[in-house]
Amino acid sequence: MNGIAKNMADNPDAREHVHEVVKTSGTSFYLGMRILPPNRRNGMFAIYAFCREVDDIADSNEGEAEKLAQLMQWREEIERLFAGCPEYPTARALLGPVGEFDLQKQDFLDIIAGMEMDACEQMRSPNMKNFELYCSRVAGAVGLLSTRAFGDASPPAKDHALALGHALQTTNILRDLHEDAARGRLYLPKEILLAHGITDTDPRTVLRHPVIKDVCADLAKIAQRHFDDAATAMEDCDKDALRPARIMGAIYRGILTRLIKRGWEKLDEPVHVPKLEKLWIVLRYGFF
Image (cartoon, rainbow, N blue to C red; front, side, top):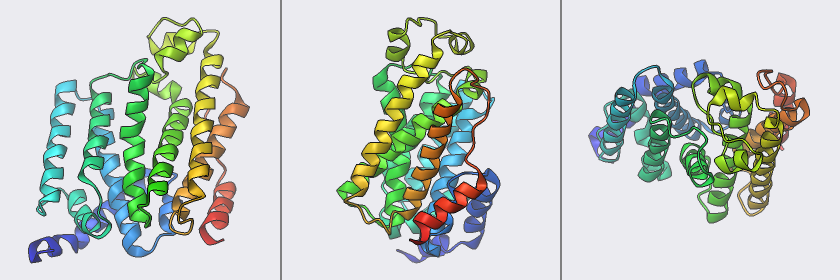
């Protein structure tokens, strides 16, 4: 690393910026990241801050053209990052982790591409192919970056990251159906909707349909399969290195279990894993 890049990688202001993004986000991932050694924790904070900032662009009230312009600016910033001369605080915080953990440019670009799908409103009853592509981009790519920061970039760890990413994102979609509908989004795959006789694509109309519970139950089964695939892949991974991923997976599997138990008649009823249960998960996977 040349002198300029090293100075930027050691920039305490950039590190403080991403730490503040994580602390104020209220993310469920915070507990998992906290158990990491300082250098890996700083790397994960920077990865999370990047994801948070591009996601905020996609979720903003700006018009489509403005969102796409801002995401294009982030594409340009990723190019500068991998050239060793980033400008944004979050990208400066990523400079050290990119070199230390061999983070891949394509994973960052894939995440941005997923945000562009949201910005272009492509995620209203997508077909299954696009649904899976979206999950791969906005969650699978995050998992691939994270597993490198955690310390295991083996093929089984990559399989685990992709499976867990799909499981987490599908769980998020089921949890946030009501909130997403208010934004005009409907992530439920077209094939599942049609299988239950739903042809409408208006989010609020779909969520009021009498058989929406069956649609959600089918998608929940898909999420469960992804959790099972992640657990199978974990058997061949470095379990110590991937403790944060095990914590995240356990918390989100708890969310999915509670969603299923709550049922699909009250989609606006929030579901959370209690703090004491989260603490037990951290103790179980973080220290044993």
